[in-house]
Length: 87
Image (cartoon, rainbow, N blue to C red; front, side):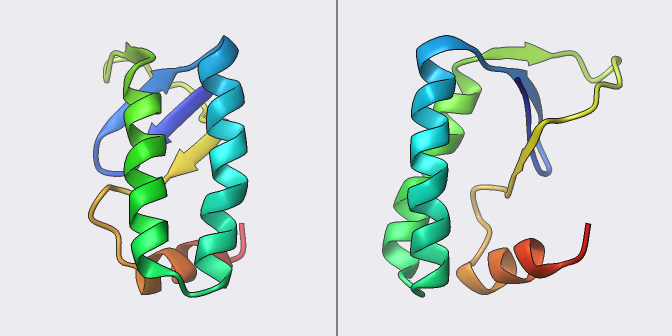
């Protein structure tokens, strides 16, 4: 799976790392919908760290992302706007 971290880059993530990201993604969305800012930021940093453990894709290659993760410094309110925007 290709994951983009906004303002940073893309990474190829596979196997157990991808399974853990998928699990944490559900928790991340739960924290977002329940307005739990501290929990949201903790989970966002954890997910971003897992993504970064994957293989970084060169910025010279344009690859469609399967998942887009907000930047580490994204606020809860910014994340709500990002996830509520129509695709």
